[in-house]
Length: 352
Image 1 (tube, rainbow, N blue to C red):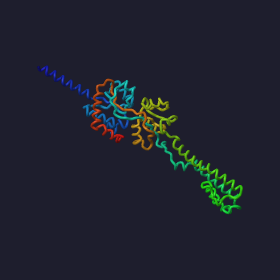
Image 2: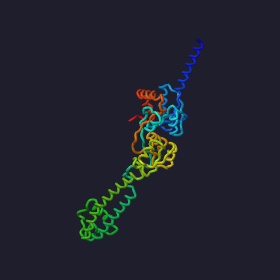
Image 3: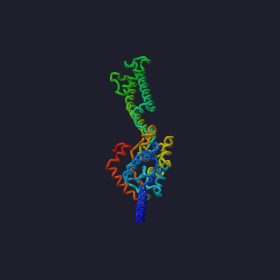
Image 4: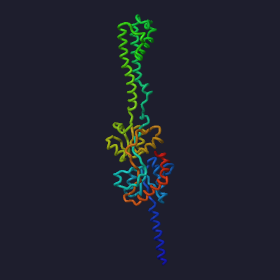
């Protein structure tokens, strides 16, 4: 009887020990602000907060295994040295063949980040202050002054308006030519000499071209200002220095579009190249680039264009993991009781 009781106690402790061990999970992650990073020695980020909420709901005990590279994090799941991985892990068909995923935990997509000084908008003031427009205005003034003074030569003995000395005639003559171009001239100051009348007709006809030149010049300067050297969409990336992280969904997308780009092993070296002005644009996960542009890179980086190639993030597990169903149920519960929305608002604000 005593032996049986002792065996039962040992068995009970063994079962409890196995259960305890089963609930002490190894979680693989990688530094990807704002999803997973270390701040003041503490694990933080959207994914880390969600993991903490899941652990509390499922009564887990877990330890964080932070990898240096995204591929290492996924590799830990594939070789089963980690029980799960969480960060900004896109759910893709190719990854589904190598591991299991939870239901989506975040809806994201790709976006383009460019240097702040590369984002330019059409500016009327910039067009008016452009060198090309100043040259055009100068030529127009010279033509009007020259035409007015030529009219003075022809008309000074026939038209009382032009009967002035040379040093007094230049502005009235210019003013007459300007009014002729803009308003069609002064009827009471119509040229009286044959050459003056011919010149007047030439000036009136040429005024149509002068106005057209001004309009076209302003429009062209504003258009060039808007498109020169700027990146506003995927189609603008051709011929630019583009960077992304190797083996990412962004890299696969750029390959499909046949856009040349530089591969980086991780986020930090890619952002360092961006800071050093080695890149014209970065294509990567929208929330990660937006977080960088709004915080550390707020003076040097801007987001451009909309989000494209929509994708979902999920929690990755080794193939056949028994944890998947429990996690999916817990995620549903966190959405229903508002915990998920609270975590989301903390890191990204209210959802649209």
